[in-house]
Length: 265
Image (cartoon, rainbow, N blue to C red; front, side):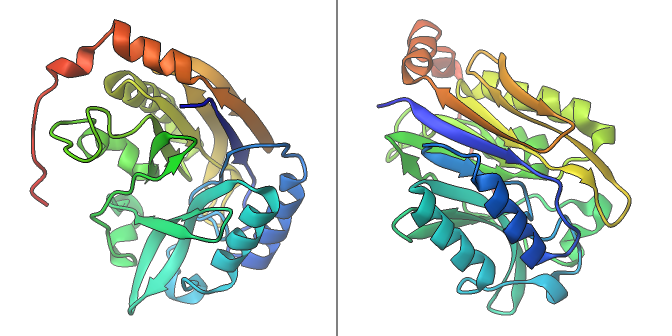
């Protein structure tokens, strides 16, 4: 298992402007040097809009193909969520795009009822565990952060082993007025699952007048904040230590005492 070079891209998203956002991210990508994984915010082409029918893309559409071309160009995995129409349904879908053009996806499970997200999107029920440099990764979306059972490293994992993932990712449009919860929950998820956590949020005001202050961050398995971007657009590159992750899990094998449970829906 090698160290993992990750890049967090915190951006001021243009409201419901797919072409403008894609062009803007291309400029931000010019700041990125060699990396293994590039993480973008939730709904990075539109902002957190409920106009799903008006701004949905498809799995062979402009935004997904843009991710494919950029992943090849940067020779890195690119991930972030888009509005996707699939078989007549609309999803807040995280795309996991590899440099070779192969992709996987995760549909947001916990839809944000305070904004009526459940009225416009269909929830998912399938997690993915892609690998980069032998790191097993669990990517989730925004509101999922408030529900720790969904991300819990819990036995039995006959195929994935005692630790089904090493890095937990949250891509988000998390408002500034609740940013304290964002910060604390990222830390909690890292501690309870003994993993690195990368949270990527946006900045700026959206079309509904909601302000976002970012606070995209890297948290280590002990819950310590290793890096953070506050209040501005920025590209953060950071190397996750495989040695540190292994040392924490070997010296503090707390997960051996965890509860076993099964989700029913």
